[in-house]
Image 1 (tube, rainbow, N blue to C red):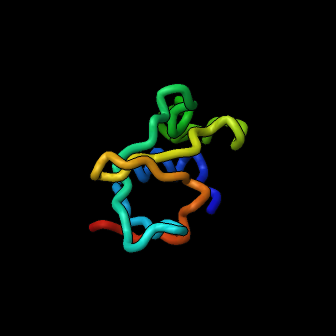
Image 2: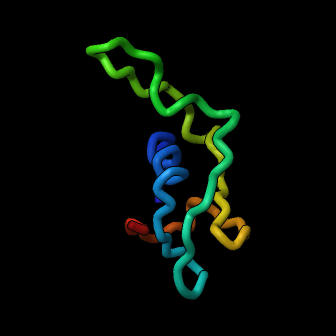
Length: 84
């Protein structure tokens, strides 16, 4: 599944439940290291809330950690649902 930069930033906050290909059961997203990536939105003004930054999808991190500390490939995500 293709997960955009904006979704990864939101997933780090909302921590959704993921179904992973080749993994029995579901896992909860905990974090994806986005320290080397652009911010969620670029700086805007009072009326303009900022644009989404440009980036190359191939340069985004390829793994995320679940709440148990295990790493999973983002491309292996089959589906996700809200954890709240």
